[in-house]
Image (cartoon, rainbow, N blue to C red; front, side, top):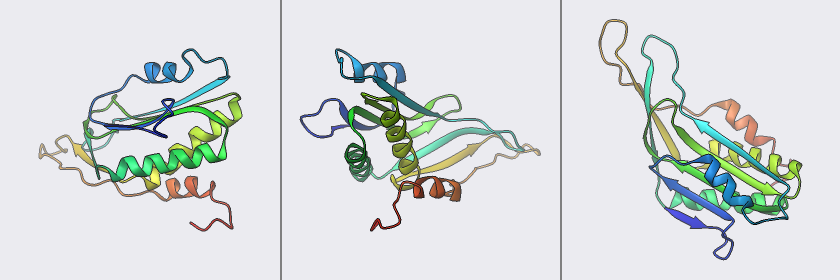
Length: 173
C-alpha cells in the first residue's frame, strides 16, 4: 500500500507491504534528477537469526492496516517540520520474514548530511516505539526435538529511551 505524503510531494512516501524492497532503488529515487540533494541517508533493518536452544526461523509481523500508514505519515510530517528534507521514504514490511530479509527502510534526503542523518535516526527511533506493528517469533525445534512456537516480542526499554531523546522536556506528548 502506498501513501504519498503530502499528496503533491512524490519525494515523500510511506508504504506498508508484504514484499521485500530494494533499498538501493528506493534510495536512488530520492536523488534522481535532483541537484539540491547533498546527502541521502538510509537505514535498512534486517531480520536476524539468533543463537539459542531454539533458533529463530522467522518473524511474523502484524500491523493495523490504515493506522500503521497514518502513524508513519504523522512521523514523517514531524520529521519534515524539524529538518529541511528534500525527500524521505519509509517502507515497513508485514507478514512472514525469514532471517536475512529486510524488514524496514528509512531513507532521507537533504542538502546537508546532518539533517539527513538526524531525520533518519529520529524516524527509526519513533517507528520502533509508535508504529502499530507486532512481531511474533517462530523458532526451530528445541534441544529435545520438540517444536518451539516462539512468542510475541515484548517492547524494549532501550527503544523507549532512544525515542525519548527526541522529546523536548516541554513537549506535550
